[in-house]
Image (tube, rainbow, N blue to C red):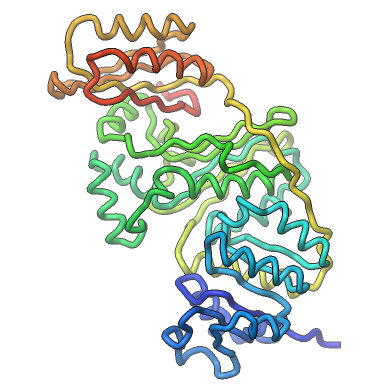
Amino acid sequence: MKTPPLRVALLGFGTVGGSVARILVERPELGDRIQLTHIFNRGVARKRTDWVPASVTWTDSIDDLFASRPDAVVEVVGGLEPAGQWVRRALTQGAAVVTANKMLLAAHAPELLHLAATHGTQLRFEAAVAGGVPLIHGVREGLAGDRLLRVAGILNGTSNFVLSTMAGGDQQMGAVLDEARRLGYAEADPSADIDGDDAGAKLVVLAGIAFRRHLRLADIPRQSIRPIAAADFRYARRLGCTIRQIAMVETSGDRFHAWVGPALVPRSSPFGLNAGANNVVTISGHYGGENSFSGPGAGGPATAVAVVSDLMSLTQRTQDRGEEWPAGSVTAPPARPYYLRFVVHDHPGILAGIAAALARQGINLDAVLQEPGYPKDALPFVITVEPCEAAQLKAALDEIARFEFHAEPPLSLPMLFHPVA
C-alpha cells in the first residue's frame, strides 16, 4: 500500500521558514512524501505569498495548528520561549519535530530527547549546527563505528568572516564588522557571534551527538574575539599561523575539555584555509583518524536544505530508538603552548619583568617577536611560551597585568597546533 505523505506544519516564516516552504513548493517530486499543510506566524497576514499553494493553511493561532494533528512540526522561530513550549507540545502530541534552534537544544536537549522517546516520536536537528553541512548525520551515521576523541571546528560564520577578512587585509575589527553587517553576515548587535555564545551552543549540540553527553553552556569557557587587532595577524604570519574562532571539545576519561575562542592555527590547516562565512569541522576518532566537514554555515537556503533533509528522513517511518544525553563534566584544558601579545609604553626592563613573572609560575619562554614600525607609546610585541596549564598562565598574567607599562590589556591565545617554522 502507498504510504501517505508526511503532513508538516511550519512554525515561523522568516528567512529559514520561507526557504523551507520554497524548497517544498519548487520540488513537486517531494509531494508524495511531504505535504506542507500549515504555516504559523504572528501577524500572518503580512507574511502571505502568492507562490504558496492554496491548499496550505496560514494561521496565527497555535491552537489551530496543533488541532490539525500534524505528523511533523518544523520549528524555525528561534529563542527559548515560546519555541520551547511549542516543541514540547508537539512531542507530547506524538508529532516529530525538526528544529534549527541551537539555543533551545543547548539548554534543554536531554529533556526534549527524553520526551520524544517517551511519546514514540523523533527530534531532529541537522540544521542547528553548521547550516547546510550534513554534519550531524555524518557523525551519527558515518562515524558510528569509531570511538570519537575530539570535535573541533569553526562554527560561527560571522566571526570567521571577520577574522579571515582581517587576516587578508590588515584591517581593524570595527571596519570589518561594518562590512559584515552590510553584506548580511552580522546582526546589528553581533555579540552572540563574536563573544562565542553562538558557537558555544552549537558545541553543546555537537558534544551530545559525538559523545552522548550534555555539557552545560555555562560551564564552557568562552573568549571573545574583540581584542584581536591587525597587529596580531602580522605576528601570526611570522609563526606560520593565522587566527580563527575555534570551538573544541575533547574527551578525558569521563570528563571533557571544552572551550570556545580565538586561537592560532597553522595557515595550511583546514581551519587556516577556511575563509568567509563558511564552517569547517574536524572529527578525530581512535580508529578512523580525522574527518573534515565544510560548507556554508548559515543562510536561509543552506539551513532549509538541512531541515528538508530531516523531513525526508522522517518519511521513511522507521522507529527511532531514541537517545539520552546524561550530564557531562567540563574540566580545564590540557597544557598547551600560548601566544601572548603585549602593547606597552616602551622603556627598559619590560621584557625582564614579564619573563620573571612567567618563570615564577614555571612557564618557559619559546620566542620573542617584535615587528618594526610601531610607535613607542603603543608598542606591540609577542612572546610565545611552551606548553603550560591554563591556571599557571592566568596566575602569571594576573601579576603581569598589574605592571604600569601597559597601553592595552595583555592578550593570550592558545596555539592549537605547533606553529610551522
